[in-house]
Length: 249
Image 1 (tube, rainbow, N blue to C red):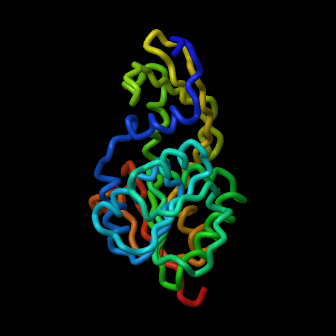
Image 2: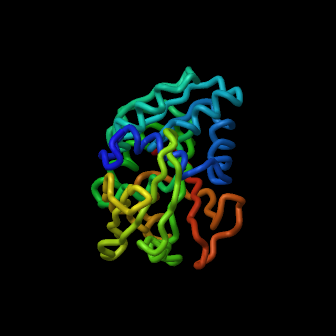
């Protein structure tokens, strides 16, 4: 490979698990999946959560969805079978009353950056759940202002699965109300950009988040400031939410 070749979508997908190694947050979501007869993983990425569930002995229905073709390619290429993979967005889920659990890990909820996308996605998730089903997800607490650390002065050096040394560089372009637009540049160690990905994350405050959930038919069962059940406080890094679909919805 030429030293300055562009980094492809598939390579970026394969790099994801290197940048985001298995952690306590993944274990938290795995526990929920293992306790459910059927589950859909929304924004499944490389599929490692559902792969782990199958390897741990889950025998029920497992479905992973993600709009990124590279992620779905990596997920479906795994030797672990028995999981259905779909390249769709959350708002495009067509299932009705099929799952006991929906999870959205790794802050995937924050990609729902507009009111329309958020409301359509929550409606689709509610339709896909059985009455009394649960939606479990995480989102960063805006009061912690984590995006202020996403600067070129805080690069991350990694080695990709092919052994290539890379440097990830982050830059916030705009902060407007509760939305943060930023770039993630995949560079060689000299700083030469091989690809630049741009995204907008939504940082919904707790009250606004809960209002959206209520409007979609959910009741908040529990919210914590971390994955170990630490009570939520204004300075918590996370808003970890367990919401239950109302049985009369």
